[in-house]
Length: 167
Image 1 (cartoon, rainbow, N blue to C red):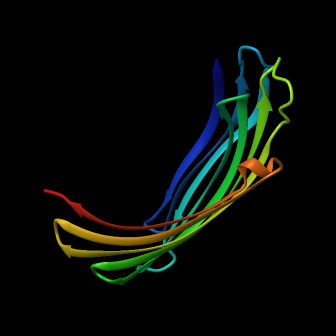
Image 2: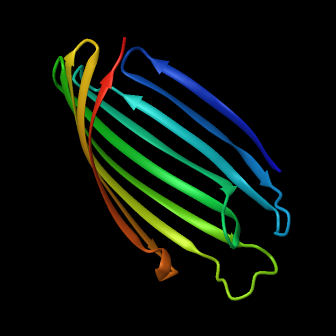
């Protein structure tokens, strides 16, 4: 059972700044594990300092489901991205993110330690709107996870190309 009570504010400051912030308390009851009562928050801000640039700031903290020998995970994350419109039809985005996951072991599971993961993400993307109905894209994303359990350390590089076709 997952219950959250949040109070928040959403704002729009002309065309330059929009955002939301929600603060509250979350309580998570998991069968076979201790309950988690945690301060929960959610942030999302979009800022356009000049007509060609958009900066997005995001973050949050909450408890969610886990898999395997773990009953739940407490996650805190932060992210920022910058999009620049070079031309009417061409833009690029650079993004950075950080996430911390604290895993809780299911009760009765022997030989498994509580896991703590720290993840850093980096990304670069480019989009070109060839036609009103066709957008071509290319991106590179790096995900670097470090854990107190070396089995879960990983580094992942994803390169993608794509086309979005709409009516």
